[in-house]
Amino acid sequence: MKTGGQLIVDALEANGTDRIYCVPGESYLAVLDALHDSAIRTIVCRQEGGAAMMADCHGRLTGKPGICFVTRGPGATNASAGIHIAMQDSIPVILFIGQVASHAKEREAFQEVDYKRFFGDIAKWVVEIDDASRIPEFVTRAFAVATSGRPGPVVISLPEDMLTSVVEAPIALPHTQVETRPGETELDALEKLLAKSIRPFAILGGTRWDAEAVARMRTIAEAWALPVGCSFRRQMLFDHLHPNYAGDVGIGINPRLATTIKQADLVLLIGGRMGEMPSSDYTVLKSPYPDQTLVHVHADAGELGRVYRPALAINASPSAFVDAFAKRKPASAPVWAAETPKLHAAYLDWSTPPEGGPGSVQMGPIMNYLEKMLPDDAILTNGAGNYATWVHRFHRFRRFATQGAPTSGSMGYGTPAAVAAKELFPDRTVVAFAGDGCFLMNGQEFATAVQYDLPIIVVVVNNGIYGTIRMHQEREYPGRVVATDLKNPDFAALARAYGGHGETVEKTADFAPAFERARASGKPAIVEIRLDPEAITPTKTMTQIRDKS
Image 1 (cartoon, one colour):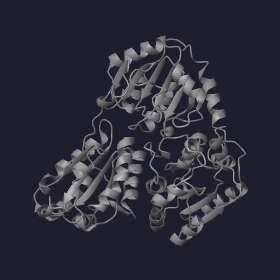
Image 2 (image 1 turned 30 degrees about the vertical axis):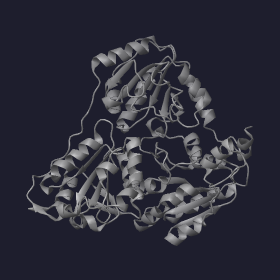
Image 3 (image 1 turned 45 degrees about the vertical axis):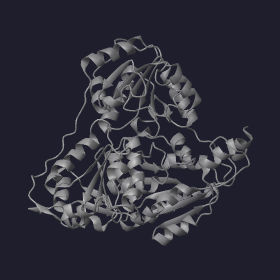
Image 4 (image 1 turned 180 degrees about the vertical axis):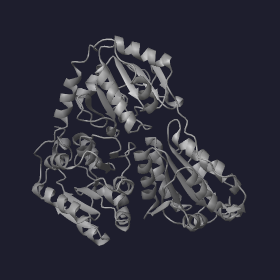
């Protein structure tokens, strides 16, 4: 006989959970009590949105569900930001929410929310457990749903009285992840399409990759001389210095790369959905009928033909597909082989930062310094904003599990993601990039880094504005500025107030020594870069955008 709270923790342990992220609440005290005697590590966070984003980064870097616990009402609604990210980004997350007691439901009781309605469109599955004896069933099913097909978030509502009830229940067993593998017929068809292709291009995206799958994809690219691009914020799926890498297929795509994909006669899309951002508003690949012959590989049959009508649909996870196709070799040297190195050379040129720019701080030399200094396994995280262009365009990712960035474009992600990444991989360098507006959306999780002695380095690019919105505002409504100016704190002083290390960079030459001091401090650190708002993109100033020059 066990309480519902004990059965929740038992089911988590049975499914391999080693840590959870939470903001405590009285609605699930029975679970917190059971965690007291568990080997599961409990990371207490400062806001539920940050906790859910930590769980998302956990799922993003490991492929295993990130587990988050929050209380009812405001706790759950705060966490919804992280659930939306996990849904759009196909990340396995399980959110447990304390719920009002059963006798109070449907009365608009204190902090009551109908979670099936609230999360219905932004979660893969939403369920409320009314009978504690069914906890092993529902929790194990949640792990299976979150990881199978197209991964995504699951939300489980836990009525308070259910958690304190004492029942007899079956012992929880671990979930079985559903694997989808390509058939020989599909592999034969792909081989024939490649054999008659003249200008093929491979785009990697989505989730359900691992380090071995990334290595096998490299083998495939080499054997077939395939040019390879990575979808928006999935850049850790291919080594950027590999001679077959052609660049990222995302926001602000290299025009030459966009032209190459548009002119391709065969596009092999593995794992991704090729949504609005990587497709440049459905122009690089037209929807629903692409100009190119499209081969779409995806673990979820529901995604095949949903947006694009493929010539060949392969229902398989990326890892299973590359495992099978790596055994196939071309009968003769591919006719396009000589073009692939040229695309890589174009990428290297595109990803070389500019040296100049307005103001006293230039981001180009800063990115050059970081490229030379950061180890290949360093993890970079970020939220959203124009500052992120410097990371996505100029940082050359080398290994799997080195990128934590939301394809959904959610601000406030970088700092909590860095906390989760450093907690998972304490021996690796973790650097979060954030704009001034982005940092202050979940910057309080810097306190979590301090509490758990996680020496992340947060680079805050402070230009005193909501930069992306100002850029669009100046382009569309030049000179009519409203709602985009910001007055910020001293971020370095803020870091010290939290108990961390703080640095302020007002000249380009200040960055390298400031970063080294931050790293040597052994504390969570903020390095604030005070950037001229004119330096709005790597290639254009705000004035040029305003003048449309």
